[in-house]
Length: 107
Image (cartoon, rainbow, N blue to C red):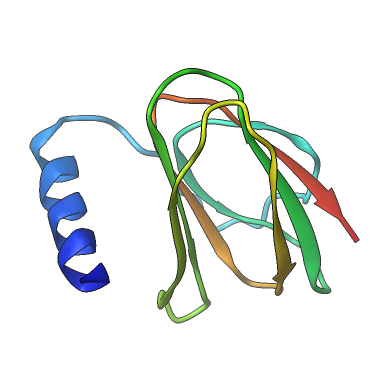
């Protein structure tokens, strides 16, 4: 089921011409508001991440491991805070949609 959902998501996203910027550089794990894109943070140990969608726009979030295996997928609830626990180093966080997502890192 998850595989079908992911394939459908990729097909739908490929229909729209949006620019997503991706860099190989590590981004400092700083609590901030992030928009659509792929982020690889420089945390050196396992962290908890508080996530809050700050806009009323449908936004999705995925977390991949270093081999691009999908570890987490969610449609973010509007303005409700939740916590992702035990996020290991070298994970890639993907935000899809027009919304703004506040990420707060707890070591």
